[in-house]
Amino acid sequence: TTNGVNLTDGLDGLATGAATMSFLAYVLITVWQYGQSCSLVASESCYPTANPIDLSIIAAACAGATFGFLWFNTAPARIFMGDTGSLALGGGIAGLAVFTETELLLPLTAGLFLITALSVILQVGSFKLTGRRVFRMAPLHHHFEMLGWPEIQIVVRFWIIQGLCIGAGLALFYAEWVRS
Image 1: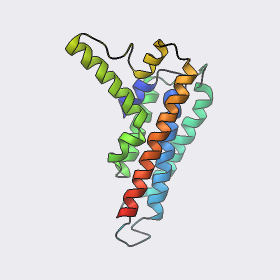
Image 2: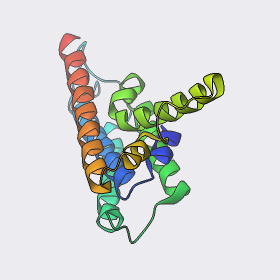
Image 3: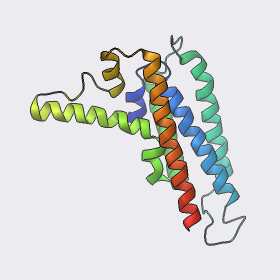
Image 4: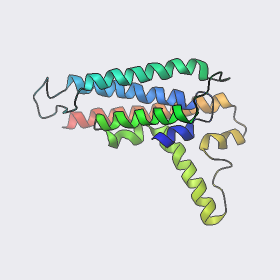
């Protein structure tokens, strides 16, 4: 996740908007886990997550911080995140997944970051094995830039993809709870 956010941080607002959505997903997950906590409700489908309300506060603070940063990071960006910020955001998302015991949902709650990282892996692997490139440029968002798409169009469409991934992740999280 940490490198995925770093690789996604190449267009104004892309990584920041996607990270905001991921943190908001963990706000919902942790609030749900708090309401279904084994310390509150003794049932077979309760969550043994330690301190879910504290995790909710952390996720909400991260969502608020990234949302506020997005004001200055959208095109044309006046403030840039850099490696330190993107790696910290990825670490925060990964940490929330570990503490909420939802690591298997991470490919969905961080879907755009996974797609971006896979595009780089495909590009490098293909070039090393065959000498040919899969994309005009990696990561994937730069491929679309090379095709002539406007930056804001790429960013908004990738945000939509991230939103769909998060929706699928939250639906899977809820479906698993209903099933148990």
